[in-house]
Length: 248
Length: 168
Image: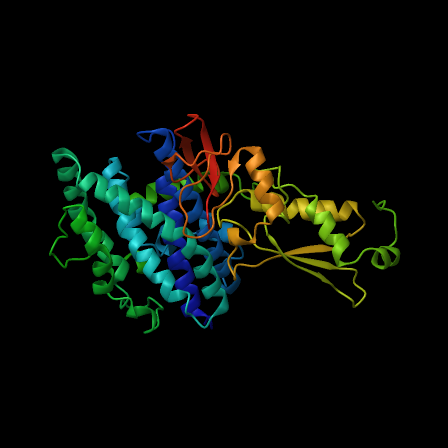
């Protein structure tokens, strides 16, 4: 039995969410609507990849099964991943990607502000480092949410559809009381309501409405994923699986 | 500078903390080679092991967590010190306190400007000066630029695009 089960569970959850979302965002490279947005999407992806590495390096140190961050990224099977379904969802159109990011950035900032207070210096340090980058991510996704939501009739309608579509997936971010999640009560104090409150000003400014449904997707933290993750991993892991031990 | 063949004891006798610092000041940032990693405020500590293992430990604070230059910087530190006779260098990554642009030295600020990158502004200010014509009539083009640490702007006076080293 691992003595650091809570820390391991937390660092895999944070690391996997960042890793998979980073992979999704990097799929925009070569396809973004304008060059500046391509740079922005790739930069956010890069920040999240760096943060994923910090979490997974910590996870590898306390894991009994995996030795390095690369092992965790490239050698785990789908059911060993702990990310939420939100980050697996396909990019869709640009507005879809913005809404998914806006939901994620709000949650990410709140959870990092919480983890920054942790008595565990390693966790607090990663949170402190990440937080500066995530605040900047949130500025951008919030600006785009307002720009598109309060834009033309077409952009508004498209964004409202995205807001509704990603909602049940985003709610999973705040499901902290699932069995075997490894989360302590302290961490679980990031309630669904706190997250929803953090969205409300920007959503109102964007003339959008949050859905009232409370249905939430669940299972990511227990390793139950949508089929999209299998395709992401197939692409991400194929090279190290075909050529074990390959180095840059 | 010392040849690699100089023995450890001679080296320790001659080279103190300040000398190591000078060596680190000579290591350029891989992506903005006009400034050194020391000037950017990335070096947070230099420690000598006095138990006879001849080891030096350099504490490094990375700029952005995903910056691909970090791995290059680590090997540059080890290789450069190796060439100066220090065969046993470890680089320790320090995340907290998190790196901030407040740690960039005054010398680097003027070098960045001369290189064509608008240096980070004091806290609270948000209008970078054009590094070409010094106009303050500039516009943000993109919050992200060619590296994680920069954003993209355009001068409305001379119409030149330029990079701004973001406040972080």
